[in-house]
Image 1 (cartoon, rainbow, N blue to C red):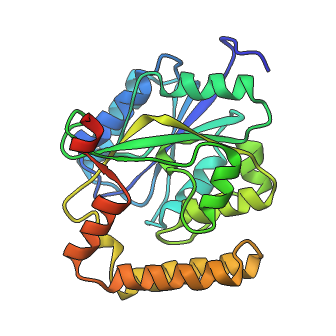
Image 2 (cartoon, rainbow, N blue to C red; image 1 turned 180 degrees about the horizontal axis):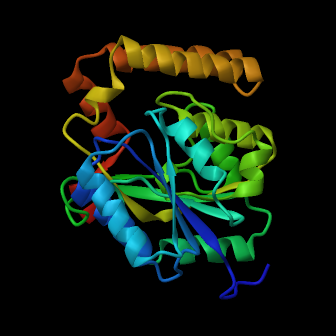
Image 3 (cartoon, rainbow, N blue to C red; image 1 turned 135 degrees about the horizontal axis):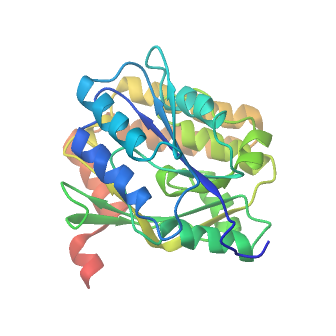
Length: 284
C-alpha cells in the first residue's frame, strides 16, 4: 500500500459520565489537529452523560456534522462493551483509539499511517508514552514499550504489549481476533493476546506519540482484592487459551498478588521507580 492522501482512518473514543469537560476537549481537539485528519470520529456515550458533557459533544457535532458519529448506550457497560458497539460504526479499515482525557501529538496518526504504508503486514501500531498531570507539558514519567513484533510477543507473556490509546489498528484484524469484549481492567490486554494468537503483527514506536493523563490515585486503583481478582481471572484465561505457560501463570499471579496487596505507597514506588522513567531521568 502506497502512502497517499487517500489513507482513511476512524478515531474511536468512549466517554462516560465522570469525564471532565476540559479534559475531553483537550483529547478531541488533539485528534482534530492531526496533520493527517481523520475521516470519521466515533464517540461512544457509555451510559447517560452529564448535561455539560452532552453539550460539549453536541458542539463538536454541529461544528463538524459530516465527521462525528455518536453511539449512545442506555447504561454504562464498561470499555470493552462500549468499543464493541463503537466498532460497528467505524467505516474505515484503520481505527485510531483515543482516550477521552489524553493528548495525541499532531504527527501521531501520520506517523502510524506511514508505518502501515511501509509495513503492510502489520496489524497494530502504537508507541511508548509520556504520562502527565494537569496539562500535557507537565509530564512526570515515560513508559517505554517493546518495539518489534517479537519483543511484543515476549512482553505480552507478562504485561500488556501496547498502550491502548496510542494504537492504530486494522478493523479486519480486530474482528478476526473476535473484537472487543468485557474484561474489566484488562480489555486491551485481553484483545491483544487474542490478536497475537490470531497471527496479528505488532509494532510500537519508541518516540511517545501520546501523552497519557495520570492522577494522584492512579496507582491506588491498581491495588486491592477486587482488582487482584479481575486481573487473576484474566491471566487464568490466558493460560486456558494456551498463550500463557504454567510458568507465566504462576509468575504473573505471584507478582500481581504482591503488588496489589502491598501498601499504596510501596505500590506507587514500584510503578514510578521500577516500571517508569521519571522526569529527571528523561531530561538527562
